[in-house]
Amino acid sequence: MEWEGHGPVSSALLDEIARIAGWKPEAAGSAVHTVVSDGMPPSGLDGFPIWPRLFGGKFLLCRSGDREFRFYLDLRELSPQQLLFFSRAVTLLPLLPALSTGDAVLCHSALATFGERGFLLCGESGIGKSTAMAGLPASWRAHCDDSLLLFRRDSGYFAQPLPTWTRRYRRLPEVLYQSCEAIRVNRLYLLGQSREDRIEDLVPLQQLLGVSQSFSSLYYVFRQGAKEAERQTLMLHTLDFSRNLIRTLPVRRLNVRLRGAFWKLLEHEPQTE
Image (tube, rainbow, N blue to C red):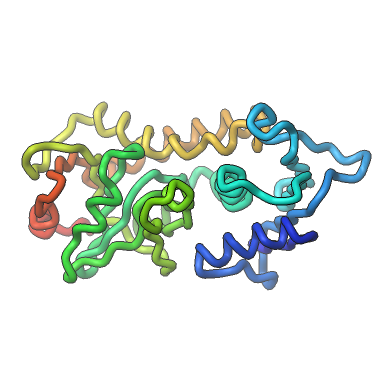
């Protein structure tokens, strides 16, 4: 992925994303080119506002094919809410080519490793992903607590943490994001809250509904940033991805206490080959 900023507002936006993410896209070998510019697009370009009711048409996207995304910001400065939304859009929309293959999904999940094993803890906002990651002991490594790119390869499923900003702009503690290589996933859990730490088995329908919901909850950014046919294809791919995953990886429910020691249960779970 390659980023290119034109103008002080757009350049500051990309610098802020790079600062939070801990990396900046390189031009060499980039499959997707993202350009962010101050002002409105030149006449004749086919642009449309992203969520116009929210920002009054001050943020437009013009797509040139499937490998170039051009954003235009008609603003002198960005409010925290706008910076949050624009950051997500600029970061996630260029993932469309990868998601359209059907071999990758966005996942609303925390990611942690114990030794060589990777664990996904999926759940909606407020369910306890960040709290669970913050409570892990030193023998564990927490990689992210909000979102990631989950993709399938011949040898299994791998997770790549993605930078996020929601809690940052609500004046809460820094969002956990550790830039790292893709991590192999051995087990997936649907996170829940309980008075005791316990793991529950789920029937296939429960697994499918829970997994697919965790995969689709971040797709709101594509409602207007993608064409209708693309959105339909994405949802079909997400459902197929979910079906294939539950046939391959163990999917169970993990109920945790606010100050429990749930990781002890996970440490005794068998490794998935």
